[in-house]
Structure formats: structure tokens, C-alpha cells
Image (cartoon, rainbow, N blue to C red; front, top):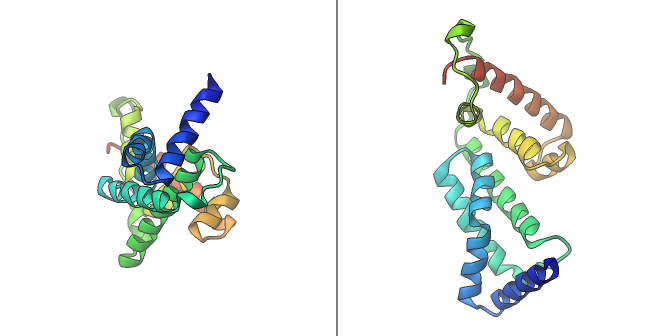
Length: 181
């Protein structure tokens, strides 16, 4: 059973290489939702995630001849998505650098009995509130499973910066979760 799924997948990729639009669409449908989610977790913005998704598939389809099959197609595509998302975050960072101090504003402590219970929705909202760099490192490390060396290479930062950004992201996340979002 597993072998036939791989053969079908390889056949789809072969058809894509010949320009078969139906195969392109099938491959897109198979991976679009997961790749959109990866892009959104890194960029924190639905419009940017849509752009990442489209750019990643365009790049992937244009460079299918360079896909050697060493890794799964999904892993290869995910790497493209991550790179496109990081590029958008870095471009946004250069367009307007947020002052780090604005994230250090002390919030009044809310009595425990008045706090909402911790929900997945509240955690997602808290992650979306993180500065781009913090959110990107947190997503790549905790959700995508990259280690600090890989994150450093992907984002063009040092391993120590990756570790520090992750620690700051966790601290900021805890802070956000203590307050009402």
C-alpha cells in the first residue's frame, strides 16, 4: 500500500515536469493547506502567508528538475516555503524596525480568578502578537522542529541569537498569556 502511494506521488511529479496542469493542480491541492500553515506561523499574517504559498509553488514548479528525491517532496517544498516566509519577514523588518522596548511594557497583573483558562485560541493569538523575529524562531523551533543550527542558517543569524530569540519569545509568550489578549 505504502509503495503504491509513493509510485502515484512520483508519477504526479513526473507529469508536472512535462507541464501537465492537472498534475500541478493535484500536487498543489495535496500540499497547499499544510504549506500555508507553515508560512502563516512564520509570517504571522494571512496575506503574507498567501504570498508565500504562491511564490513557493511557482518556485517549486519552475525548479522541479532540481528535485532529486533525496528527501520527500513535502520536505523539499517546506524548505522553499520556510525560505520564502523568512524572506518576507526580513523584508518587513528592514522596512520598519520595531523598537524592542515597546514589547517590554509592563502590564498590570490580573487576579488569577479573573483570567480566562488557557485555550489553543489564546495561545495562537499570543504567538501572533510576538515580534517577527521571535515568532519566526519560535515557529521554526517548536512547531517545525528545526534545531538552532538550522534556524541560524535559514535566517542568517548566529546560533546564539536563535537561542536568545527563542528564550525571549517564550518569556514574552508567558507574559502575553498572563494577560487578556
